[in-house]
Length: 310
Image (tube, rainbow, N blue to C red; front, side):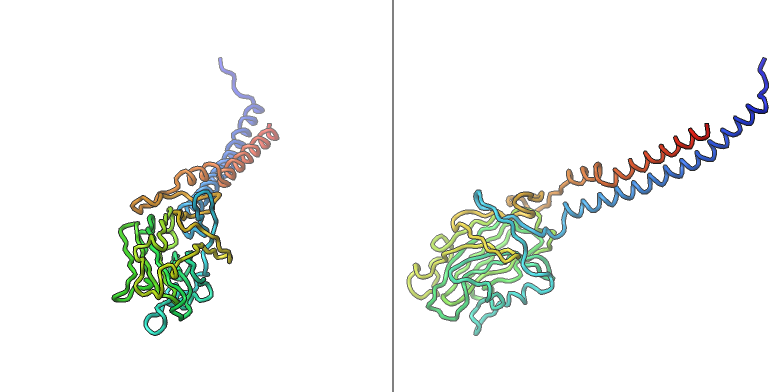
């Protein structure tokens, strides 16, 4: 025969029911807040990681030749248009860049990145404008693989009708051939969206006798008087690094120590994403730790309240 509950047992059962109802609701609210805050934090962490690893302005590039590598940054602060900054002038003004006079070096070929208000550009600059035709010219051919397919030659120095220079482009592969007379500079600008510079660009150099434009008909004197003697890469920090005239160069986003993921110069230009980086960050980033910490605090609070009640 079942014995009826005493008043004391009824009171105790009722109290425990009220406690469960009251603090159970509190625990539910805490858990819901934990899930919402944690999910939001994880989501934001994942978004930031995707932006850092998957695109945007690379900021720095590694320039590797053989066993030597230099980390360089773009010149410019994004306020000027690279076309105006380069300031290419034609007839009556030397068929040369006049905006880069302070960077030009006699008998020297150089390249560097320039950040303008229309994108990120790879700039090529050869020799120095002096106006004196007796001071030797030069001849260069660059074969380039991996250039952004969304970009193009914004400045062709020289690109006027009848010019001897040649700029060709097929998907991510381009060839540029320059020949210039003494006293002039030469070059060009390849511009693309900053996020498009996400893969390795390979430059195969052909200087002097190896160039397609050798010997250049506009030279005065023998070909030996019109030689490129140095090849350098410039950085936005003011440094210039010497390169070998006869060896390929690889340019990739990131630094020499930590290159960013991307396809190589032999690809068709399609971008390769860094999937692993995003997954790792979402699983182990600060947002995930916030979830665990808040959940542990909620469980501990419920345990303390339960012990006090009992």
